[in-house]
Length: 69
Image (cartoon, rainbow, N blue to C red; front, side):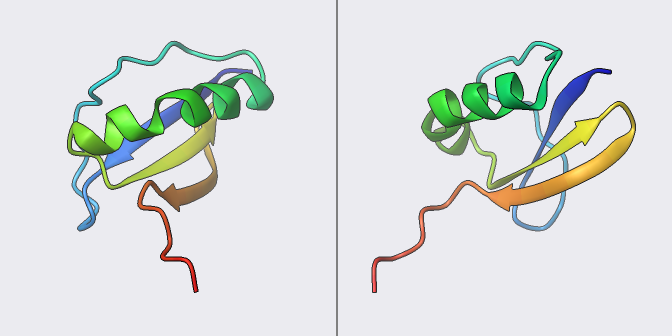
């Protein structure tokens, strides 16, 4: 199994990431990496990311922090 991220603008257009990811062997490794670089990805133009296991979409999430309420 290979875990990969797709990087998108808010409108769903795919963009090149500011930080080039590797192919990860576990979901935990992929999630740890995104936790370390999400601010750089956001600054580089990505608004959201989607995690895939091989070709299966697992989930997507925004890189924008929610306002504290």
